[in-house]
Length: 517
Image (cartoon, rainbow, N blue to C red; front, side, top):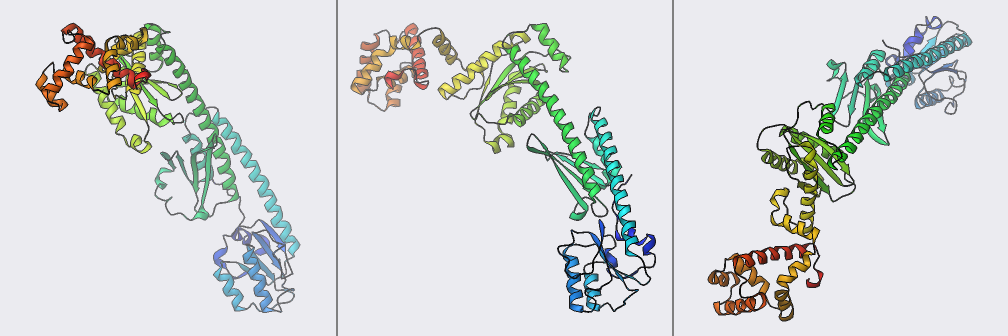
């Protein structure tokens, strides 16, 4: 169904007053649109025209002066008039060849009346037709808008709106969303939209929340009409409403999921409640355990939308379903295992693919990732959440990149002791004499102690690593025995001292033993 509501010069020639009109120039421009009819007898017309007028004249103001006639035609062309009709019945004259040539060059129709036709009847006829046409156009626009509004109440896909637009105008319709998803209707015209004349193309940008979200195009066989652009505008508005509603529903669903997952990880739900939630989210089979992966971003303004989509897509390929909860610059993903074996290996592969993705390389996001303890029971995922946070904390405090909580080993014990007691006091109880000695005498007993323990008490290997002679090493070991006790290399005490050295490093890295920095 096509409703172009555009009166062209071709249409005018079919009306009764133009049956015997003679076309002497510009026949190639008969598709020019006509919006109004104007009678002019003066040569200066720039202030009298707005564009797309059919000009009626007897030529009294310029026919005796070829230069004035040429100037008159040039002004008509400049003001984008649609055509010129000249009454030759009363005072006939010859049309100069340069006038005909100029009109042909610009596809500007010039018509001659050799039989008398009252201009008042022409203007009345065409103006009545234009007014009726305008009324019909407004009526059709209203009907189209009503159909659109009804569709908005029931449609689930924007394609239904596009089909309505294509059927109504009969033009090729192209809709592109976010530079990705694209519709072309009818589909067989997909190749025709390339390199189309701009005058045969109309475009409407669809904005949501102040951002360009999609683009809507129509491609016509002839020039785009005013009715085409009005229909396009109403369709774009309807699409914006539909897309905004979809975004709102999705955002609301995500917000509900975010809050629920957060309450789950806070330990507020039992096994049955969690399973009920998963079933409602299209996960009918109970997962085979899982864990929590936290991604903490350095930039507070990071756009998480694409990252979450990328994360979910990657981990689905490795056999996990991912639910997400978001808090400021931190994303916590609940990884639900859907396969039988090698869960850790699959998580490692997923994280590796994530970090090597083009998106991460281009965005250069600074992110710290922590993976918590693995759990068989859904209600135990709280432990996975807390231990993932602990893995993040240790990495940020120590600079040690270790994603998995279970790989922190000694740091887990150090962090636990630090939570429940004064770690600095315990460390200083064992190492304070050595630390004070190095501070006072600018010595390197701490380094000697580390290497000596690492070499399992081998004096020769220790001397080689420290690049000192054996006599110097003997002197340092004697001093360590004086400060730590002669039994500092016995198994029980040696184990504690090694632990305290790591705890000391932890306190230094976390800036919690300031007096010795």
